[in-house]
View (cartoon, rainbow, N blue to C red):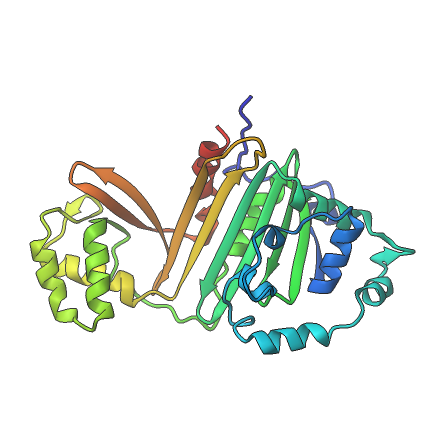
Length: 308
């Protein structure tokens, strides 16, 4: 039986203000792992990844600003208080029993039907998040430093609102006009070649590469001239202020499942989605201007693909 998850319809108004809000709890890594132990030894999303040679969390979370210095990271963890004491003072663990909401959220993280792994970088900030869904509930876990985590749980109909938080751009990231059209359809090979030229400091080769490309680049259905293509494709690389990537998969422990991908890039004027497609001339890339609220709409067909 195919399961449908509707992320395009706004949720119905809640009966009360508090009912419509997700529950959120900030937990240090030791506190989070203690709750996982109290939930029957539930594995956390990043603990499912094989440990690197160093054995520390930074290798499993990926390189971030907060975890780039292993020594400082280990020192920060060692400075944290006993999780039993800190959770007890907050009333989240009483007599060795964790809050039922915490247990349920951590349990859902470990036993979902649908899994989203989210990686967002903007300016000097990087956030990793894990969204897990089953039945009518969603649990999310996110961190920007691998030390402090936000654990949240919510009803499925609130998931669209939660996804909007993923695309929030920090206030210190500059914005302005972009040389990339609102919709650009360009050969992937050209984007790759221009990127290599710019990386080598040979921007003078960009017009030559565009002229040599036999494929056509278009914006909004209109074919672009050499100068416009060179400016637009160059801007894809030079304007980049961040990126977003979501890996979506149905969790099936009996067989290999399909993985869907949503990729966005943060340019001077905001987010642009990056969608690959195939043409008679070879692989192409469609770059389209999107609003932060469009993430759920962009994600919906990907989820339909992986759970079909």
